[in-house]
View 1: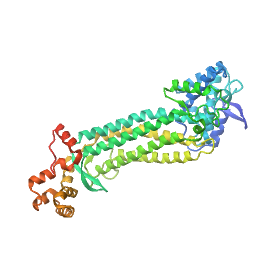
View 2: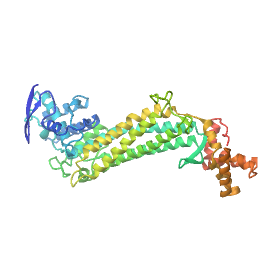
View 3: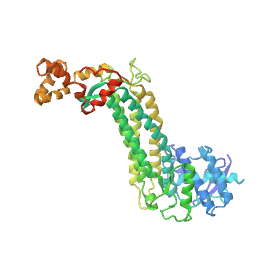
View 4: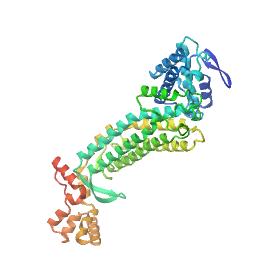
Length: 479
């Protein structure tokens, strides 16, 4: 295998001649053979867009030779067109701050630029990873800037999926607004709700989660670029940051702005932590909703069995015919991972010291993984689970007829303690509260019909539900 000799501040090393990375990347490979996880493509491209914007700005300022700068820009464009993707190989668990990854990018772009110029790879006297590709930059301002850009880009498709999932639950809420059922608190029978109200609550919670992600992502628009090593901007032209960020906005279509305080931008990872927290909060809601779906579909003979989730695969290798709520189970596992990712992000955020948080690489890995997991799975969960839910109206009706909590509607007539006695008798005899109340002469049949009407059962929400029942031409369920 042909090799070339490269030199850095620590000495010389042999580098395989066919690769585009260089000596510092090679040292990182040797030092950190850890997880096998490398930076995702969206982060690589965000970083390369920064390099392109920097080259454009530095050429405009007259501090980067145009021949060299144009070669760098062409190399950047090739990477942005999905070439050389296999050359970004530094493990996500690496030297603090992301210096290894920054140099990986610098070396790949430098060596490809040298080829474009007709030079041999490794001839850094002509075009250097540090002096030209990294001109006016530091890992300390480019890495967090690339983090913000990659998150902003990745969040957009996630927000669409969150909205579509919310819409799917909202449709279920409208489709089943007429199905009155037992509410449950403490996992015990409680006052009635409709199945549509339960589904609409899920839609609302998911929509609120998406809103929080969107709002907190606005914090990411302020980037550290131009602060260089410690926030002072030393080593960069005074006009560099403004020009480079303007070029980045043109390249990305985002609304990026210089950090209000460049020192804070290097020290604090507050914006990224806020976004990670919003992902965790959505994950917690999805865990809760998935668990509700598992409960509501439990059975089919010994559980709630009020709904059925679509059968997507056999559920057992030994029990024929068994079907499990696998889509909801998978959602749980994904969301558990996201909660764990957020904890790692939180620990990394508080581990910053003085002028720099050096733990940003692991934050990048965890937040982007959380976004990827949700973006990939939400459409599958929606189409293979939520949109195929069917309802057992008879089961819901049977439960509401036997619900002892309906005794609450007797309280204005006979008081709390007497109503409790009716509830006990109804439960013991497996009859409805209404039947027992009429049988004991506590209510006439006419009074019972009024007391246990939908207007009474559903309280302040009854008006909307009656309207729904009329629209769907359903009769008020028997109680």
